[in-house]
Image (cartoon, rainbow, N blue to C red; front, side, top):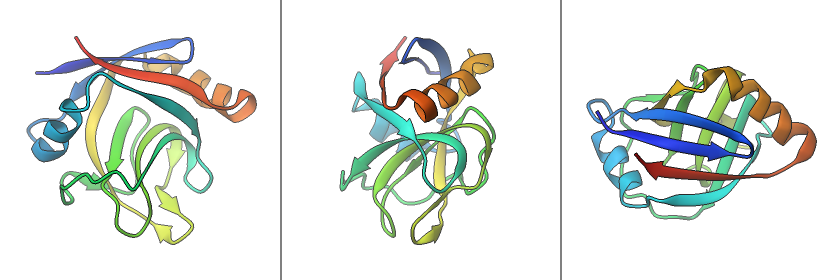
Length: 137
């Protein structure tokens, strides 16, 4: 089992890569590590944050995809109808964009620090973008 450490604003999380269910997405993301970006609050999806990736070519199709992730089920949307992005939900969420409902590949699951997901979400909502970094453990 591959685990990553995630630092987002003042919060720390550990996440398990879902290599059995989303092997291509996990391999793509592993090649980006360490990965640093900004996380912001979503506009359409409910209680979630997201990392916009613009037109980053992912080169994978849908695998282990969902529109209704639970808190801590991190999705990578490989692009197509909307821009490429990572969705980091902290509460009730239906993954969508201006074009409507989307499905993203569930490739990471938070296994430690889940009690701070809501705090991160509310921080991005009220204070704005936060630094986020994903590292291999």
